[in-house]
Image (cartoon, rainbow, N blue to C red):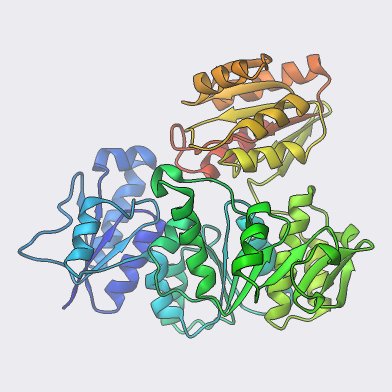
Length: 462
């Protein structure tokens, strides 16, 4: 029986382990967290139930500081969860020893490559574009689930397929981490939404980050780009002449023929020369969401979806959780959850999409990146910034250095929500926006966990 080791006891790692176990592999899941740490992330009964379930499926667990490569008993396959650095020394050693070392997405691809994929990547805009594409496929009556960073873990879909579930398409939101560990994944349609500096603590240079994302598009049969993104537009004129391009600024801004373009013209979405729907039917705020919409239309037209299904899905699409998600109105104040804004560029877009003056909640686990455009948007739109998490002191210092002093360090989300109501009354602000510009891992398991906490705290206001 061949041996496989899964690195990371998350949802994707568990799905990968189950998939391989059902396919006759001897599987071990290794995770650097101790059992007590894992229990603290959920609860004891949930963790014990998970252990029992894995044992029932003959999947072993190695927790704490597991030895990933035992020279006396090397695995044939290593599957890495997205959060595990690809340059971890044991993974470099494994690749040098010619051990098959892949990501969870690549494993799913091996089981699902008979199904056409749409792969969506980019610094920002991935989630909304992925959700739109999946919604349009659904409106057309197709079984096309979303996976990756949204919806299912990809290996969960592979498990369903092994149990005779058939799919028409797979719609995958793919981060640079997932692409980096998936050298064979080759979508029928590849979409690149935006490109700005992000994850540089892992990828080291902007060039490395670009090459990783570009590799997915190179392997895609059809390539779609956001022609309004400055970086993509610049490189596109040199490197991606045969791609499909979009622009909210009209056909004259396309860097391709109108037959290969999707654009806005006279208030209409036009795709490859065909009128699709009036843009007024699309309810999501912000020009960035119009850009996401055009890329979704391009992808689904290339997949053969007719104009009627596209228009119907778009007209009823309300958005995605944690990305400019309206929570409630309390005492005339709209509470907006933008927890998915985990970097400066996404947070700048969030601020640009709401009416000033706004009470902004920001902070968490800081990322590397250029913050000046975000701070300028704060100066334009924010009446006060409430700072939470590890980044609060650093953000306070940066805001002061840039001449903005209307901020408070409140430390926790609970404090921020309560204080935001008081400040909104004082400042005549009608919007409280959680748009952190940070990862969530200092105080939360994920950006979803952070957004869920914000939602619950807002709903408890009385």
